[in-house]
Image (cartoon, rainbow, N blue to C red):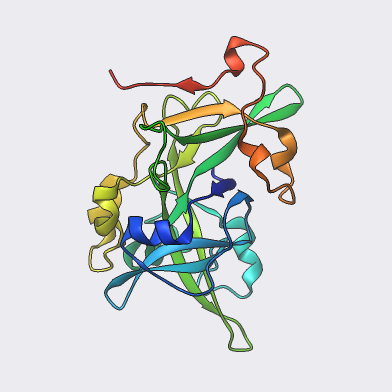
Length: 244
């Protein structure tokens, strides 16, 4: 699953990367511990153009009786989203991208769980603001409360973990390549046309390493969350898998 993530790319750089216009109420960045039920930045199509918007993380289907169902809908399994009543209509017509600088997963270690941070491999010593940006495939919905107020929310699609993530967790977010952004976002394309994109990231695309357990509390939101733990062993050191 994907239960926490990071976004540090400035809003202006996000808009440039996704070739999108921006709403005025974007999340204040950087963020180092974005959690479910919080508002997140997303990219979607509005009136035929890409736009950066804010969505509540935890999808609330249009048919839901109340918004609390969103607490259980932070992720959608890529293999079954087209069949699930909660996600199938969004997969067909309301797809979005949730930008991230990286994401956390927790590895069981005896009675405790060790958080790991996964981010893109940087290809330059001094990267551009969006050089290491991840584009998580998402779904969004609009729910109307009994008082008439609208709530727009989203879920992140997850798939089987690649070789790097698998030793930590068996699932990972679906990560889109830039050349696939338009295909994913295009509401004119049916779900079958985008399902080939719902696959694990290439094994050489990410780096992962253990980080502080402080990330378990969403109140802890600072750059120290993504600093590697001092390697007490070779296993704890950052790991990079490169394509052969």
